[in-house]
Amino acid sequence: MARITRETENESIQEIELFDVDLSEAEKALFRSTPEQFAKDFLESEGFTVNRVVVERRLHGDDDTDPGFCDRPLKLVHAKVGSLNSTWIWLCPHPI
Image (cartoon, rainbow, N blue to C red; front, side, top):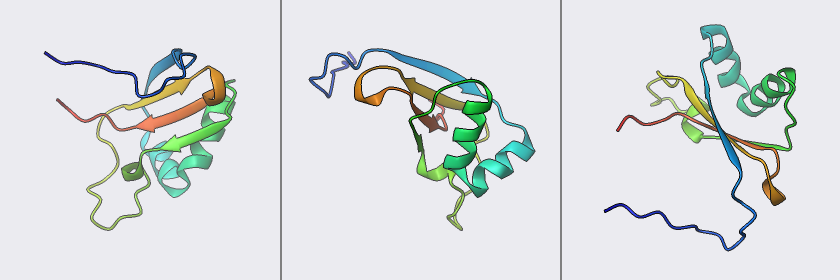
């Protein structure tokens, strides 16, 4: 049976939001050129507060062996509490 354990003793880190983000081809190109800045500008234009942005390494597109940008909608995790307030984490979900 699978088991999930908390890796932090900070009990306040409990509140997160999970989003799907489907970018156009033009938006994907902008994202790859400056991932953190694009992510921050994109979220702020939607009215969100952004204190920090974390982008999964393979979304940067700066590796010659990279097969290309994520071929499915991105997952966006938003931590809303404690020292992680308004931290946005951009991920390409792996198929199971």
